[in-house]
Every structure is written in C-alpha cells, then in structure tokens.
Length: 116
Length: 113
Image (cartoon, rainbow over all chains, first blue to last red; front, side):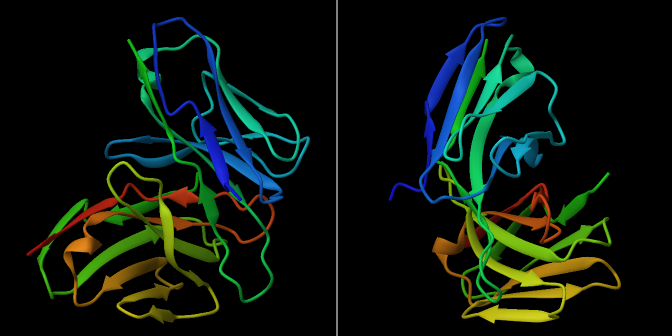
C-alpha cells in the first residue's frame, strides 16, 4: 500500500517547455487535489477533482491543466513553463471517512520543479 | 474568496515551554479545521483536527481550540521538544461537497534545546 505516489521528485525545465506531473493513489479515494507550495505562501490549491470524471479550478489555476485519467490517477500539466511556476507541487487524495473518524488528506512526497 | 490567516510566521520557544499558533478564517460555512506538520523536505502530515461542533480537542501534548463566533482556532503544544521543530499549517474546509482545504501560510516553529 503505497498511498499517494508522485513522479518525478525533481525536475528542471527551460522556460516554454512543457511537462506533466503524475499522481496516483491506491486507497480508492474519490477526491484528489494539486497544491503548490511557495515560501511564505503556504499551500495553494491549483486544481481538484471531487470524483472520477470531474475537475475544477482552485485558487491559482492559470498556466496549468489537469486530467483525471481514472479513479487512481490525477495528472497536472504545464503547457508552457514559466519561472513563476518554480515551486514544490503536492498531490493529495481524500476519502469520506465514517462519522467520528479522522478525516484528512494523504499527501504525496512532492515534486520540486525549477523553471529557468 | 475564502481566506485563512495564520500567525505568527515564525516562533522560537525554549524546550519545555508551550507554543501557540493562531488562525482566522473568513468563510462562516467552514466547519472542519485540520492542522498539519511538515518537517524539512517532507510531505505535510495531519496531527490533529477539530469539527465545528466541538470547542476543544486534545491529543497528548497537542490541543486545538475553536471559537466559531470569532472565526478563529488555535494550536497549542505543551512541553515542547526539539522534534516538534517544523512548519505547521492550519486549514479550513467545509466537510461536505468538494472537501477542498484552504491553508494558512504556515508557522515555522523552532524549539531551542
């Protein structure tokens, strides 16, 4: 049981290049999320998928696209990378626990992306 | 839009002292408030959470209090230890629908030995 797996762990891109960040969870969770983490700004929501087949914008969606390929996988794509997208990206999944149980996100280990 | 403010941004305490981190939220419909701890280079991990129908929750040295009227909640760590040094994030959510979290900007806690 690996939880939430993100690939790659590190990536350097040149301005204008494109890439896809992969995320997969093996916990049968319905909801998945992409956050970016920048110093002093916490975790900001980029896109989320409340269930298979649906995606919605979060706080900072510009410059990104997502695909909920199936229940397990939720990918984030940068079509034309910019230096402002240099950040640490976290994928997370969430399940609706039973009443009284702790809820919460399970985070992946993160992708450190540098755009030069 | 929804917003969560978190203070202070950095906090240094002596080992054994208490630490308090405060958050305020803007959306009165929020009813679930988790706290995450992130060690250097690691992923955030849930340490405690509270629902809006509860005013306080404790788990060993960690406690969270919630004031719904004032829309603020706080994390209290007692008898701090060096391993408590990390960045702590609060978040607010409506525990239904999309379950998306709005996070605070984080507090870097340093426990000095």
